[in-house]
Amino acid sequence: MKNLVDYSSSESDECEKEVKLKDSEKCKRKLPMLLSVSDKKIKNECREDHQMRIRSIPHVEGNWATHVYVDCPLNEIFLSFLKEHEESSQDIHSIESTHVSLSRTFILRYHWIDNFFISLREKLKQSCNPCTIEFSSQIVYYSNEDKTRWFACILVNESFTPSLKALVSAVDSCLNEFNLPVYYENPSFHISVFWKLTEFSDEEKAAISQKIKNFMEQEHEIFILHIEKISCKSGNKLIKVSL
Image (cartoon, rainbow, N blue to C red; front, side, top):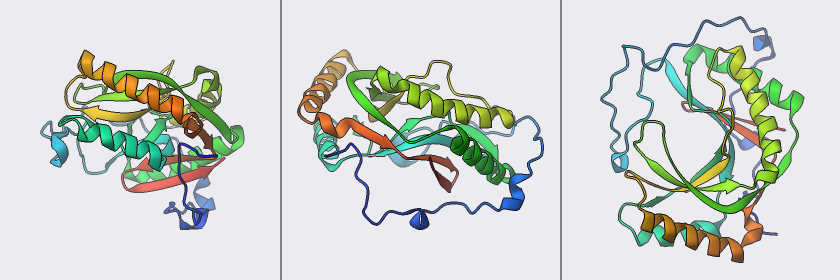
């Protein structure tokens, strides 16, 4: 059966670039309140060169942007479909590296990262199991918090959200331990497939939604995702936790 994700047959835990966590580090101390992203040391001039996107979280030395998510690499059939639509528009861009978020993007101080990884791994393994989710044909349009980018998204079928909420609960438990902001109270689980720098017009929304719905009717089986690992990336450090 085809899946939304394509995995290499050679993929294994040993070939992943995971951070090595020492058992001796499991004795964690209470950490101070996280520095605010709005700290006066942060500079506002943070425009990226790539496609004129604006960096949502400005770079500050020692602060690492961190995110917990379910990795969702696209099936080649769907990726080709997205590329075809991208080529027909000058300002709409497809997203090749998709994911389902289990946290907001938050900031960790560099010296907290290993302890955070240890805690996250423990909490996920203690309370979560592998699960399966399915995506609906409902297309929604969101912006990021600072309104610098807009996204076309495919929602997870509501009947599968309890499994994702269980994962979020474990992640939130870890975030609370480090005095970090937890995820939204009623999260909208989704993958983002297109983005642009300005809001999607009604005509663009109608065209994109209809094309995706038509595609999903023909290739329904590739929109089923088996979740066996959770990813957490902090700066250039990445771990994948097997459930």
